[in-house]
Length: 113
Length: 114
Image 1 (tube, rainbow over the protein chains, first blue to last red):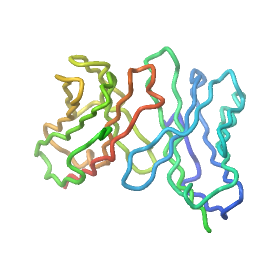
Image 2: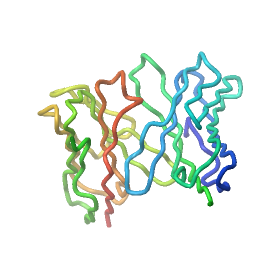
Image 3: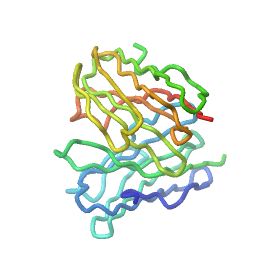
């Protein structure tokens, strides 16, 4: 049973609009969450993270929101650009417990010019 | 500085064959790991190493062996390939396990087992 789920396999957004990628988790022990971005034929790259002591973390056009009670996090990209077209993975871990990451299945974002 | 390199990029094996997926990093990173990516499943950790001579199992270790004789290299061995091992394999490295968030991934090896 997947502990981290991304229920939307794909998302299409117009350039300049907001992209919202969602992620749900079931393990309440997770206390650190991350988003990775992956282009075709490349490995994933780290994008942004959030600790469970926060509910929001912002880095330029990228903001991650965490709702612990709902066990839900989301990544907002504003404004979306064609270069943001990629597969986005959310991941979670339990800090100080091996640091092993559990990944979601990914969401393919397509930003149309 | 090449980062994390993986060879080969593509490989087709017959059931029962063996092979080694190579991974090397030139950043003097202590922590290295292998993941497999299957459609809809995300990345799953196969094995990892916190330094030369030290390896441990991840989430899906069965059917795979690893060794870490040097800091730079972390090969993944399939002793008897099975169709269930058809996947894309990623090697990654980070300064140490505390920095696993910011690990650098290689470009991947796409393996097909027929």
